[in-house]
Amino acid sequence: MELKSPFDCILFDLDDTLYSSNVGIAQVCKKNIEKFLAKKCGVSPERSASLRVELFQFYGSSLSGLIALGYDVHPDEYHSYVHWTLPYEWIKPDPQLNELLKSIQQPKIIFTNSDMKHAKRVLERLGIDEQCFNGIICFETLNPHLFQDNSSSSSSSSSSSELSPEVILKPSMASMEAAVRFTGCDPHRILFLDDNERNVAAGKALGLHTCLVGKGVKSKEADYLLENISNLRKVIPGIWGKEDEEEHEMVIRNELGSIRPIAQVGA
Ligand SMILES: [Mg+2]
Image (cartoon, rainbow, N blue to C red; front, side):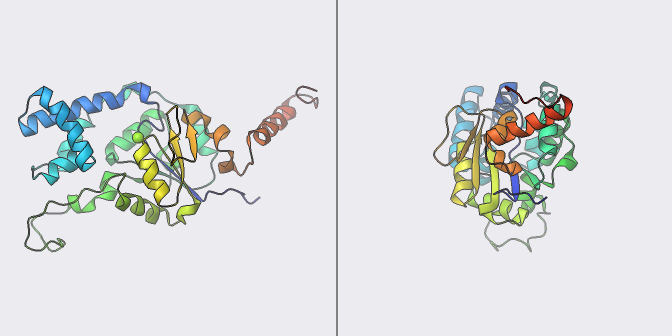
């Protein structure tokens, strides 16, 4: 049977989207970034906290800011410090999420600013088979130029100048366009889920269907609001080609009906 859904592909952010922000990983990550900034830039712990916020606001991320300001930082050095030491054991297996994802027929792609090693660790902790996804768009996918050998300048478009390489991350349009290219789908047929309002706004600007996750209030660029990813089937039944929640309940009732005698629920 052909699936009647408005979505040909689904892009999932990872952190604070596939697991709750209440897990606390983001808070530890922020502390790690501040420690890294203190070490790298030689600033006090107090200054590193405000510096992290400033770099995020002006450059989109601390790593982007450090590179733009000319610090000699390799992405792997940064990620090994701020990500790879995270308390991943705080993330618990989520078999319901695994089942939910497996029930989605469309291609599913992880779209995260994090590095590949982190993404794989998180999926592993959640108990989600990486093969469940048709791909992972991550820091390395978005920034292959940062992993090339610096000694050969042939790929540099800035010729003799010493311009810092640009770091491509959500919510930049370049990152969103890269993700759409990766899917090979019409942006108007893609559903994008993310916990960050700025990322959601960038997705909307490209014409994607958008869903803000983990928040209590829907931003204006979000088509849907999910307080928790576990509500996905209820809030966006169109993924499964269903019109609305009532129709989904009919399916559940029918499934129950195959177990129980024919009597309808509530009859
Ligand atoms: Mg996130």
